[in-house]
Length: 302
Image (cartoon, helix red, strand yellow):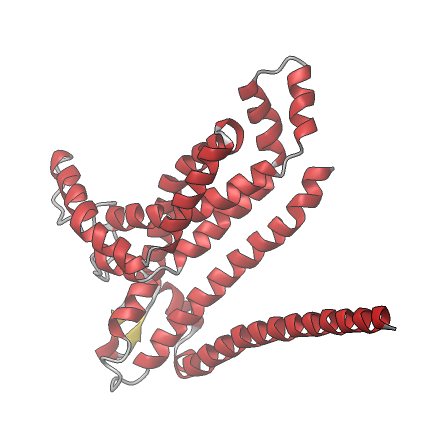
């Protein structure tokens, strides 16, 4: 009798844990849907006044004249994010290969501890370091290259964003590489392949989709970043012609202007439409990456 009572209690706890987890998952998804609906509702006035093509592809941003073209901000966001990924991806891939294939277990654990610390640093701290270090460095590079720049530029934003996304991409890439079964490595080595040939032609090939998912997650993380970029990118609403020119990404536009010029008609709705675009892009990339990561284990085992 005592044993049956204990078993029933354990079953009740398992059922409670299961339903609690489902409720929390429903709550999180409902919250995301609520935010999306709220942004869409707030953006309705400008969506009913200005066509989608004018909103997305016009470069004219003059709120006092009711001109709210977001093209400059969208291009700036894409450029600074792509620049960050170009800088970060080779570093992350090489670091992840070393940690996964060559480093000792103790060093790997120590490196993971440092990476976790880097991932937890607030973005405003990265932005401050960018103002103190990266901006003067970019200014010096510009002078050496014969380009007139204050240092507040697309390149400064890309460097700061690259440092911010590196911990995320390395962590996921290391996990993906470690998921490649050890017998596959041993087979390649037994056939006469060197260590590097095994990594290049077997491990990386097997983990290709997972690595791509890690890069996409890093892209989504960089795309929506606000404070750090806002502090170093210059915030000038003009299309940058080089990496030394200032830019004005969407997150910086929202953070700089929301609440200050609310008396201008449609200004609030224009900023909400910018936030809606950000949310849609980040959600699209995040969903794609998570779907790929969910399937990567199954793919590797084939």
